[in-house]
Image (cartoon, helix red, strand yellow):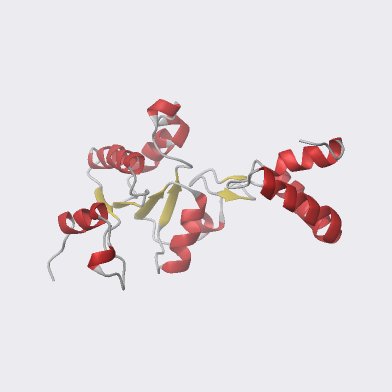
Length: 199
C-alpha cells in the first residue's frame, strides 16, 4: 500500500481497532476526519483522551463509569434483591432503554471460553460469588447471549446461585413479537417450544 506519511498511516492503522473497520473503511474515515471535519476530529481526540483518563470499572457491578460506584449502584431506590447478569456494558443500556427493570446489574465483560483462555476469574465471577454470599440477592436473572458460550456461562453462574439457595431465572428466548413462524430459524423455534409457558 502506498504511504501518505507516517501520521496518516498511523491514524489509518489506529482506526482499524474499531469493530468492523477494515482497511478501506479506515482510509475513508481518515480522509473524512482530516479533509472535511477538522473540528470534529479535535472533539473526537479530546473526548477520547478524556474518556481514557476518567473512565474505569464500577467496583461493584463492573460497568464503565467515572467514579468508584456507578450511578445505578449508588441509587438506593433500585431493588437490591434482584441481580441481572449481562455479558457487556452495552447490554445494561439496552435493558434500561427497553424495559422497566429497576434491579442491580453485574457485567461480565465477556463469556466463558476456555479455548481462548477466558475463565471465571477473567469475568469477575469470584467477585460475583462474594456479592451473592452477602445474602441480599434473592433472584439472579441471567441475560447472557443465547450462544453456546453464553449458555455455558449462564449454566456456570446458575450453579453458583443455586448452591446459595438463590432463585435463578433466564431471559426468555424464542419467537420475536410480530414474527411469523415460516421465517423463524429452526434453532429459535426449537428453543421457543422447549421454553413454552402456560397461559
